Length: 80
Image (cartoon, rainbow, N blue to C red; front, side, top):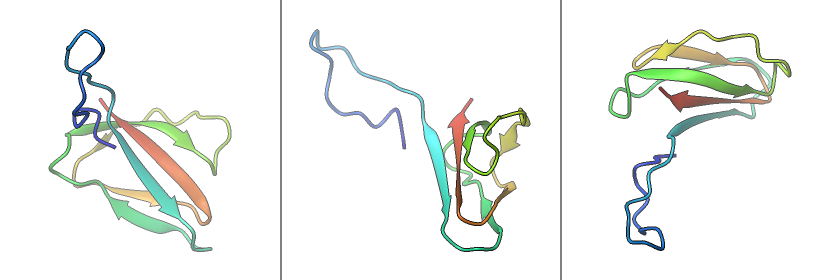
């Protein structure tokens, strides 16, 4: 979700910019490795991991890196 792709201005005509997120969905029962794309940001911060209800992982992820997503779960990263 590209926070810089918002095309409509706010009510005062200013450009609207938001955070950008990378959503990784794994509907399979086994862990799947996703590769963070290189064209949308260099560093990504974990925001949500439905496999781990209490987030203790603050490891930064970098473009081109592989990220594991546990079976039947969702991981959300925010561009730093």
